[in-house]
Length: 273
Image (cartoon, rainbow, N blue to C red):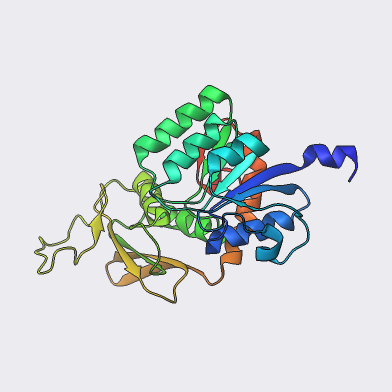
């Protein structure tokens, strides 16, 4: 590799590297000439060889870490991609920023208050960061199409379907979709009849604009969402299906590169496309 190419290489750490998404991220980094794997963190991989686990010879001597802060201090990566769980994503993100590392967060479950605190911390350090509810290009388009359709339909509901190991509900994608729809329409379901739930939760969660969001959790699904709009005599359904986690990886790679040019927090992949 010549000196010019070396300067362009972005050193990426992966947090949650033994999870299904984390494994795909590691493989993506290993196969992208502009990215260099700086380290991997997972609570279930202490002392395990990266080459042995991933079946590669590209990272001789690299082992899994359990301590994110120790990895950040030792390796000083440019970017850290996090696919962990809602319980640890916020402290992980703040640790990255404190270490001068740019976070790319795929883990959902951050509150609006936490997002604001992350933005403040990034700006105070002169860093960029990204929180991305969904890295799939098709999912981004689904959200944008739903935002446009909401200009013309004031009755809509969201059904999101994920695997049964997903820790949070509704999904970040569903929450982001509803947020975009609210920008086009302030109140949904204005002519709905008063309802009585015979079983609590039968109508799903309700967002501030009265969009009902239903979460399905079953083995066999990966990540799927449909937004259903209703009007007199017609139904419009906008749906996206992730059939393989590989669909998220171009968005992850793009985010790891673009975040180097950002200041503060960017929420959503659509802002860098």
